[in-house]
Image (tube, rainbow, N blue to C red; front, side, top):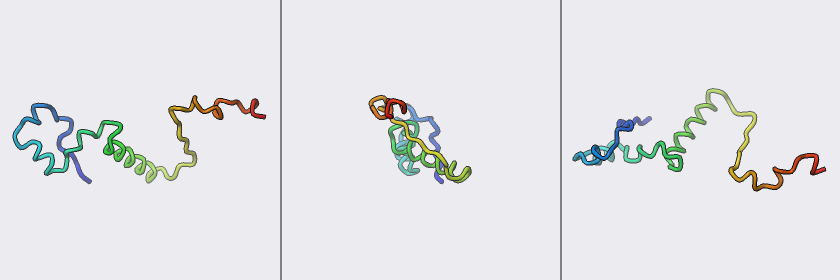
Length: 85
């Protein structure tokens, strides 16, 4: 497992340091700064690892639900069971 050594210390001053960027590339840490950006592949890779670790420790889930941000746009979800009969 790879560990990063940047640990949030990346700033404009460190990027200006000679050899800093080459060191990031050599240690394969060039994309580690995107770890906390939700839309980045590295963020979702970390979340995937977290879910797989939970499955290993707790076992397979018995109930799974996916919620959409557009759920209020779905008329099927907004109709109560009494109205559909």
